[in-house]
Length: 485
Image 1: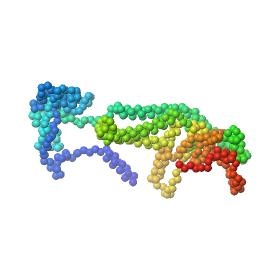
Image 2 (image 1 turned 135 degrees about the vertical axis):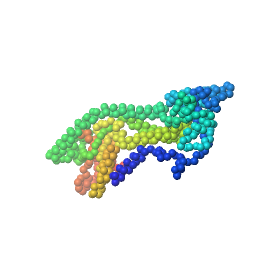
Image 3 (image 1 turned 60 degrees about the vertical axis):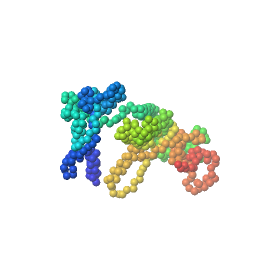
Image 4 (image 1 turned 120 degrees about the horizontal axis):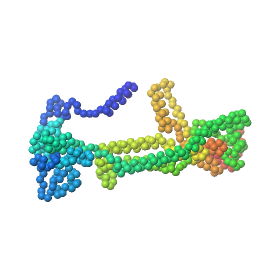
């Protein structure tokens, strides 16, 4: 199977690098039996212009003669005045000007045009020679193969007194990249790149102290947790909630203190989740909105090129196909494909970075100090497979896991806004659970109330809660309501 796959890849590579051209015979020269095709007549053949350095070198039949008051101009016709616009239409320049015009062609001027000719014995495989011979005969040019050169191949000099203006294919048009729409692309994307660079530098300096403090506290927090657990095991035997209940962890007033009579406990166990705090910044918010605007502009820019492809742009471009690409369909299509690819890459990058993008443009801080708390929860996939190991399946699973990690899809990122209760306590809601800030440990944790371990404990609470107790529990746990979005 692998051998077939590699062979298919090699075949496609060879096909991609192959080029097609005629090797064994000239097209239309031989019939199916290998015999040379019978000569055929070709009518109304257009002759190339004959170009010379001086009009006196034109063949007698092609020397111009203009009416009184008119002059023979470089476009090959007589005019009252040879303006710059007329002179620029010189057929001997083959639509080239400036540095693209060969120096040998600067002084060439055309003779009168040769009328269209009919070739009695036309050879498709040798068409240029047939056309030159027929046109030379029509213009009474003797020995034209030696006295008349070909534009771009043999210029004036020696026996050559004239040149056939057989213009090579004009070079494909291309952008100067100074067009207004490209300058707009440079300006918009350059401004966005500069803005993101400034934010990255600012963010790096602003978060130095937070990162240093965070890395320095990890070990101490773990040590304190271990000491606390040892104390509970060897000491009074009370739970963590009981130890904390002796201290006013949520406030400084007696009303806010946690008492043993309320049997409260704080669940500090979130071993697999990682919490990070973030605060908004005006510059970061501007960056986020700028990215959104530039992405929309890219999509609109792609729409402009689509409209230009069909000649649907308004104004002076209305009805003109490929007007932004100098009316060249190949250049227009190539530009559209490149822009489409860039837009596609932008959208893919935004999709991959979506879990991190908004928080990157916020300032990292401690969870207890932030306006938002980001909860990162690992995602574990349960795979039910056969007991036999499949080589292909194993490698597919490895590749899938790598892609999920590379695209940040192996973890769930949830950013929760930090809110305040009516008593001023900080909390955030994650998966329908309210996590309240413990001001003593500076950590968020869900609060739990012991409702008893048996039926008697529930019966003892049949009388309900007092208004004070109900308000207290509502403050710490929140309403008994699950919001479905």
